[in-house]
Image (cartoon, rainbow, N blue to C red; front, side, top):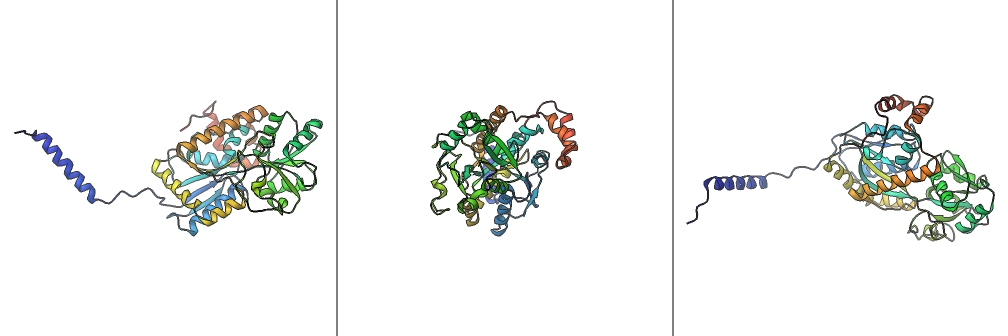
Length: 372
């Protein structure tokens, strides 16, 4: 007769008792916010990121998607550095999230502010903003190749490209066009996409690379012509916007011989040290937001690329986008040092909210800080 070792038998009995007891206990509740969540926008009110954040805020409230409210807070100082540094400095605070655009990359590269995207916790890509090459409808150019050929045939800096801000998305795309084709254009910065579209309609610049939502009114009115979209594929929207064209009728720039792709991130990050269950809560939240009719309508009206990513896929995409921005900005001579931002912050009113914080950070590091 086989005898079981008494010690082993006792252990088996104890384990069985624990297992039975465990089955009688309720499952541990998943993490949820216990107080209002700050939704940081590293840009001013009324812009694309602000609009998206407030749409999300309204959807969450209307559909009761979380137990606590989202509170949108704009922190635009220092080209968004104020917002990024706030999130970076709020480690392990799951009640603070930030919506990002390309200034996630361009602000630290162009200003030297001591911040890197790796110092936050990636959550999810909500969408990507398209960019389109526009010309005045009265111009003779019907295709991107025709326009680029005309720029090549002209004198250096003869043709003007209007865009929003300096060393940001529009100027980066302009630099990419110059690097790809060998042309040289004059870049003219304006305060916002609405101003840019108005300047093109008025004939004060020759082209722009506005987002769809920034130029749709003038396109619909027959004042602008869309030459190509800077994406790998056409915008999959077939409903007519003008009398003759839908967004899907606009060819990609690559189809037109201009091999450039540029999409602007609309993504969510958390503070450093966020736990997997906290990240999972927000990923699930934004998946629910994406299923609402209000979100789908917002995506269609803005002709967004509706790609969604989370986890390793999202982190990999962001890492690749960061390298792309660094390469483009380095070739264009847009890179700055941390000391450059500190010098500007001392005399820049919009930078004052973060000047003291930056002095403390920069004083302690002569090179970019390590990722948390």
